[in-house]
Image 1 (cartoon, rainbow, N blue to C red):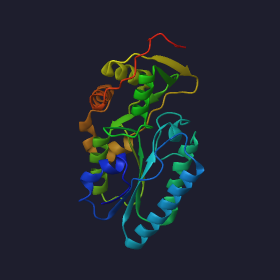
Image 2: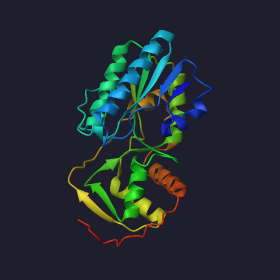
Image 3: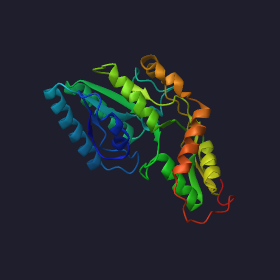
Length: 260
């Protein structure tokens, strides 16, 4: 596998570098669901177009990483599925869906993976868990009321990718997530307890439950059953994550401050 990129996901994929020689993994581009410019979107589209063109010429498969998060499936009725039309609810989700369509139209062999929220050491600050830790240290956490997020250990993602690529799939889209959405308030409470921090909630009326279907993933990769997805899985990976967090020097805030 040739890996394009040098960020969190690209580094996590390095154990697969000696496997799947027919694959180019495009682990570069936009990974920030908010605050991203049209110029950033355009650069990723150009990179994907150029990489797909080269893969088509070389007869190689392009592994592309999309999103299964709220931006893609937030308006779905029931669990978000790969085999039904979706209406993205953010600019980021619309951008990723547009890139999926660009890749399908390119003629290159490909596999599109819609990812849940990855968890692991060395994540960039803008991703979900590092962002929540920063807010905890600042003393106030902004939470969409009723929001839930699907967390998955990046090491499990890499193991699943290895098995999916081994199937020789030449096209298609697969959700790679745990299939179980954890309330964001529970995520915050576990981070708060694990890190020994106190902070207030500031609730915003823009959230909603969100579940990702992994029915297709389970059918393709029976190994998924061994990962024990569910509430216990989330508690374990959150505990693992908190052990990797470097203690901060910020003062803890009063737990009652600013609660709405």
